[in-house]
Amino acid sequence: MTPPVPPPPRRRARLKAAAVAAAVVAAGLGVLPAVASADVTGILLRNGDFETGDTSGWTCTGASAVTTAAPHAGSYALSSTAGASDIAPCSQAVAVQPNTRYTVGAWVKGSYVQLSATGTGVERSTWAGSATWTRLTLDVLTGPSTDRLTVGVSGWYGTGAVAVDDVTVEGPAGGTPSTSPTPTPTQTTPAPTASPTVSPTPTTPGSGPTVDVSDSKGLKAALAAAVPGQTIRLADGAYSGNFKITRAGTAAAPITLTGSANAVLSTPTGGGNVIQLTAAPYWTFHGISVTRGQKGIMADSSDHVVVDGVEVHHLTMEGIHFRTSSSYGVVRNSYIHDTGSSGNGMGEGVYVGSANTLTDRSDHVQILDNRIGPGVGGENIDIKEGTTGGLIRGNTFDGSGLTGANYDDSWVDVKGNGYTVENNRGVHTTNDGFQTHSQYPGWGCGTVFRDNTADLTGATGATRYAINVTVYDPASCPVTVTAGNRAIGANALVNPGIPVT
Image (cartoon, rainbow, N blue to C red; front, side, top):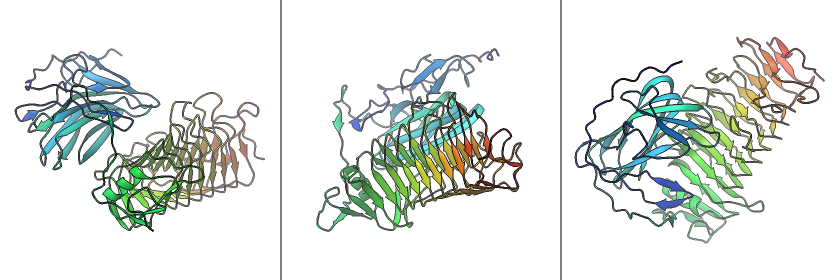
């Protein structure tokens, strides 16, 4: 199809601005960005309409470029295509005033486009998925120490090309924060303003067997200073923040974050991940509640992460995600519900691996004895291609939140190899109970289904099988379905041509 002829270029009032650069975030190094500044109240971003014909004023990574294909207005728009392991972000920092309200906006188009605004004491984000231009806005109130906002736009892992145009930050301009033209990266260590108390004798986080924490600042300080063998113990109460973990435990001495269900971790705005592990193996989370964020618990490049007895709920996207080769994870005895409130089918309860790639080897993940659902806006469990050797056992599924928006029409969808699915029970599905799919040749194979009970009463989908094996070859892509599986209200236990042993 020939793209529509773009309308004539817009005329834009150009604000007087100083040098512009985006915030740099790299491996935990604190590098201050150059910041856009203006001397009048108005639209503070430089080149937010991309009418320069390039990305000047922005810092972009991944496949991002300015294009003339069907902009929102004028002659140009930003086009970004996220890969399997990146979101193709572009960002720009602007000078702002503390304790002041700003409106951040953008016109976006694509299956998943995110707009964010971050700064000292500020972390806001929103997103949309639409085939037509849609306006996103954020109402941002800066904090007492906020002198810059970093505005970001991005796609999402493997979801295709997105377009962005007419990005604005409206409000009074700030001064130009002092920055070095060539700042020297410095390793930053959080300095807690409210130090956690440590028992029995140490007085600083990270130096003893147990750290007692009672507020958000203390929790962030304890996470930043955690050492192998330590237990961080939360008092009952609300903990607000995006809690980032980069400290590693060991096989002999894992690190534990524990508390009761009344120790509730959430983000301040509903955006970002509540708990984010990056290269942080051997962590155990026990007993706490995780809620009100984009994702609940995200493990990136973090092996041996255990989620035990945790309630994860009311999130925009998935509840727990093992990604970027996070192997040997365990989710057990937990309650995961009301995820994927965005309604686009990207709200899985537990998500293992990454879509459209074989490089994410999040292998040998075990999902045991959990209650998943209701209100899960995607598959209760989604196992991606490239992952192998996991175990799904003893879980109770409730698929009453399935949307069908992103092909979610079963409790469990297995696209990896060599998984065992046994002794699970499910109710309330739109179509099938359990499915296998092959996204790449040789994948979606070797699954063993044993002693599961699938109640499909009320399902209205086209197939309505307790177990739907979409690709099967006894030699090259075997799947085992045992006679101990049980179907209620289904068209059949398994689709025709699949042997039951």
